[in-house]
Image (cartoon, rainbow, N blue to C red; front, side, top):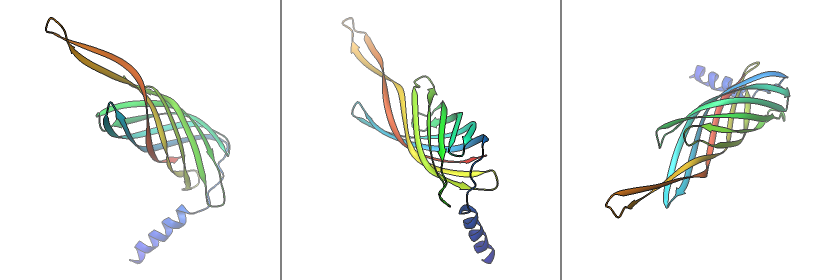
Length: 183
């Protein structure tokens, strides 16, 4: 029991340790993400969970400004489909004693048959974890534009069926969580 308590106290001290100010140079991220989309299409309610793994690499210009580029491999659990968003990442990190908040915005495009513009703002906290590694926990939104196929079926006077289809663009907004490390 004493060992267990020691481990819990050591982890608490490690996670609440003073965060170092970020230095200029290369910086990379690896993240796990989850997004929940709920919307109404033609009177039907849709709920989807999206899971993803992303990597971002870029440059820390000053302690408060980072610019990078990355990609994510994500899965839509409802449609059982995979897609790949590519994006630019703009991030700012701040330090207020032990409190080290961050805000970042990922802007890009989703590569898939029905892909489109993607915008993902997020705020969170960076926990110092060693000399050059940090753990990041964020919460935000994901705005995804996608191609929507609307198909209607009609009966031809000769007895056959005619399918009228059209495509339009739709926007969906989802609640998002992200957990990752920076190095």
